[in-house]
Image 1: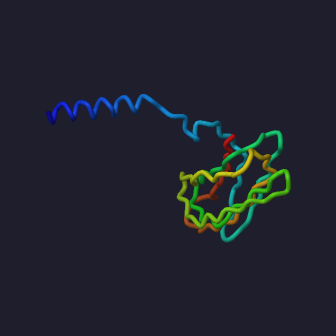
Image 2: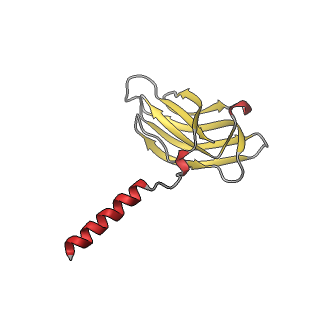
Image 3: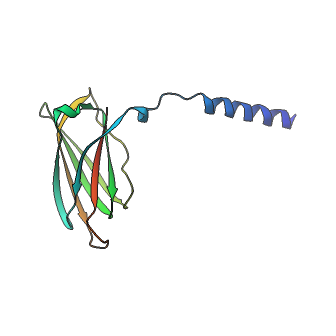
Length: 133
């Protein structure tokens, strides 16, 4: 009896693994901009053009050097601003969680990031901002 239950449970798991629900991460991601970051406490802006489209989410990818992200502000084409308190230390090669942009898909005019870095690595760090359609 235990073997039959085990076989049934395994069959159910295999069936569920082949049945994929559409995931929110299946939508296309587009690189919106890249910034080389300075050492110390700083603020940078990434300009985004309307030709790049409308977006429902963002994520950051950090490369080359660790970065301590404090805050991110998204400026939309309609004048609205949405801020995210990140307060997170990113290792080189890591990425942020998906930052949802609630409401209808909106055109992004610019993204402002506040961060600090320590001069512990060779070379400057780099932040990529990715947008999800």
